[in-house]
Length: 101
Image (cartoon, rainbow, N blue to C red; front, side):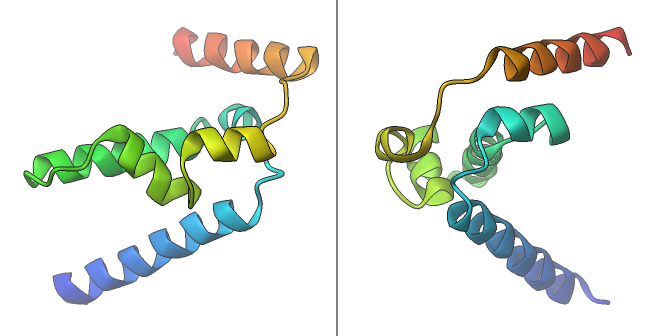
């Protein structure tokens, strides 16, 4: 596979991942962090970093708007719930496991 085709496939997969996250706002970021060690905000940070590496003027908030499909403040108001004590404990355990490596 040539590099251009690989890049096209990776971009298509990334677009599908972003769409999937946008289509499933019920999946909370803390759940993603517990299970996969990344969330929508991580994707936005990676997106903004990739733009910066290419001297493209795109900040973190603009990247979050791209990933969330709306300004983050709006998404948070519409979809984010308070993390449960169980979720917070699971997240803390995940962080401890990560730091122990």
